[in-house]
Length: 99
Image 1: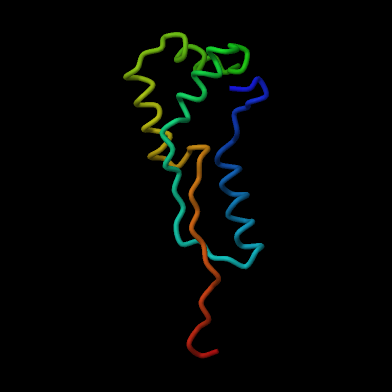
Image 2: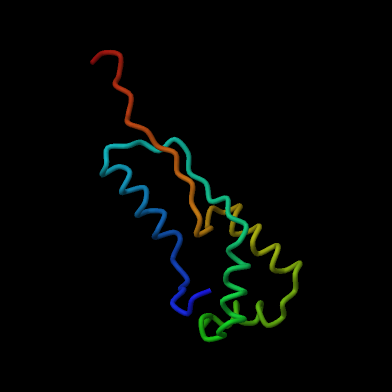
């Protein structure tokens, strides 16, 4: 992982993506964050350069390197749509029958 990697605020990124869809005149059909690699990417980044993770909670998780805990963290990230990997399906709005 390059040293320039960073942790992103997924909630802010999600909001920005949905605003961009609206700005382009599209409506959201579905939105998912199906990734299963967020924790693995962060763990590899931490292994390469521990200074990439400044949050003490996450530093401790990666130092402990407990596979069960890290798998549960990834499940939490995915099930709460907090992954940095997004799939968005959108379309042009349908015109109402009266138009």
